[in-house]
Image (cartoon, rainbow, N blue to C red; front, side, top):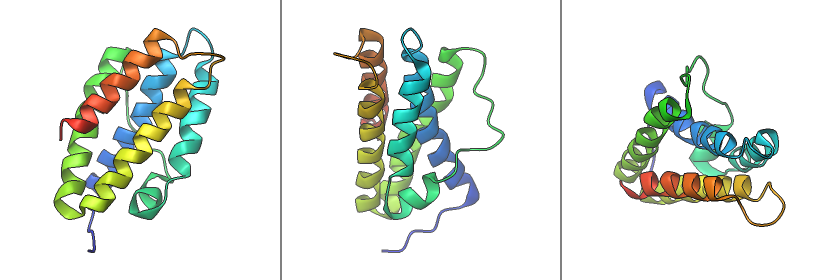
Length: 134
């Protein structure tokens, strides 16, 4: 099946994916936000398929707001919208996107020594919940 994504569709996917990594980074700020973001980013740029092609670039010109809450207000709905969009066009690519985001959040959470903090665990749960809401 061939997928046709508009520039807006691609932006939505990028906001969802890169925003999820940003949310994890914010949740991991007490230890090392940079390590959390690096691990999550590596997972995103390692994606394959159409998702991999779209996620090679971070979204440009996006203003994530002044707080984690404002960021979540943008990112969590974008995750659900991305899943809905991809499910309509190609369920296999929707599953690829879902797995990519889950791997990115897991990689981000493992940037710390030992168990992930409760803050990171909760943010990962919110991200997964937004993906599964589609």
